[in-house]
Amino acid sequence: MYELRHLATLAAVADEGSFGRAARKLGYTQSSVSQQIAVLEKAAGGALFDRPGGPKPVRITPLGAVVLEHARDLLRRADELSDGVQRFRAGDSRIDIGTFQSVSNTVLPRVIRELRDAHPGCDIRLFEEETDAPDLTGLDLMFFDGRTDGTIENLKLLDDPYLLVARPGDFPTGPVPLEKLDELPLVAHPAICHQATVEDFLRARGIRPRFVFRTEGNEALLAMVRAGLGAALAPRLAVLRTDETLALHELSPALPPREIFLLWQAGRTHSPLAAHAIEIARRAAADLTPDMTVS
Image (cartoon, rainbow, N blue to C red):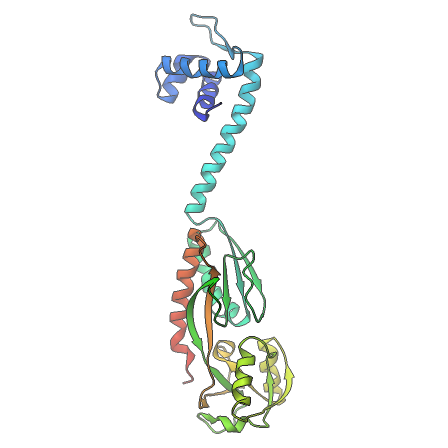
């Protein structure tokens, strides 16, 4: 009924005080401006301007003032819509990312930093949870340590090998035979996610460590090792940044590595911001790969 171009013409006539000046401002002919105002007047059911003729400016009528007030509001909203779409295309939108502890300390900081650098106006929201099954409700992307079913698409980022973490001197330098873990006091993460897979792997080979303490926190895990409570089985990402108070040993044979994936809902169209986040995560994981072995 009321087209935006007609409303923009109405505002221009009101601002300029004449059909001719409004036409020059908009790049129309004066007859085109007159036709557009006539369309609006027909739709509104009355005159929108008093036209005194000659050099005197046209004046908005009471009906015209009502239409003009709403016209300016609609034009402002249309501008906001256009600006919002442009910002979205430029990546200045919102992204919700699910994560877990090891990724939050290694891969994710680079993703955040590069997104912020490239899209200063973006809104990044993070949700950290250790869970057996991924729940992508309300999330654009989710880092997860396991494979999923066909309702979720994924990108494998890297293999995260398990290491034996101990105090220096507790074990000879080099790989530790897997059977040495039998009856060994261990501190460990809760038996969920890939930790459960590791423990099943050991039990299937008759190896039963004594789990003396469990914690979700990587720092608490390492602190208990330093304190002498026990050794620990930890994925490499959890111990990338250690010091001389801890020794890292590969295991022989190796435990099944934890697979790190980036997930999203199947069939979902990515925003430019989410697409950029995926590419950054891919590069960050590739750059981490050389650090995944013990030197």
